[in-house]
Length: 115
Length: 115
Image (cartoon, rainbow over all chains, first blue to last red; front, top):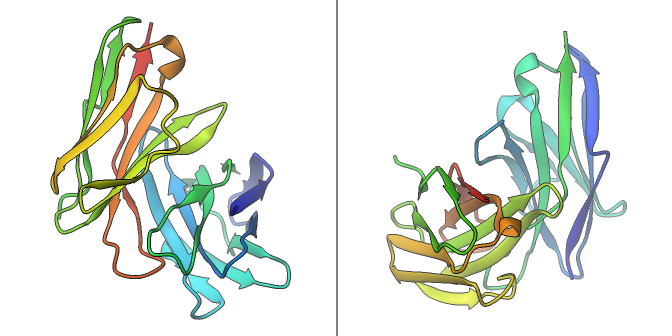
């Protein structure tokens, strides 16, 4: 069964600092991997996704993630945090070669940005 | 373009009452998902449809929950009778299944409180 593990339920950074949110996946087949962001009282919005093309994926709002098969990781990074980045971030996985897409989410990481 | 539209946005109901949550997917999408989000369990997939047909309902917690998709532009999730432990945010999401790695778009959620 596929799954994702997000290390750290909370991550705190200062404005302008590097953001690193960790995600490790488990999948018996080549995975598709996603990062979603959830702002307070809102739904989930796609930040970026990996679908077996380039291993370094660039998303919206300056975020990017790198797929590393050897480490079964898909960590999310941003060089310089903004106050507006404060939100909850979810990593998700779906099986890459099945006919129907079923996203399995991690438990989420809340990013706190201080001035 | 309109996104996934859910109603009601907020509902407070008494234990034992019937609750109906509604969803209009993005026009042209052929897959629809119902997720539940709670602090304790995170994001759980309850059921998903493809071309209006339920494909996987293994996440539906019990017989009190039912979901229907009578046509491509409308779905309901019903809880009868409701219980306090059903209090959660219920998200509807949709995508176009045309290959792997399709983006799933989420609605703003229906915030349910059962007292």
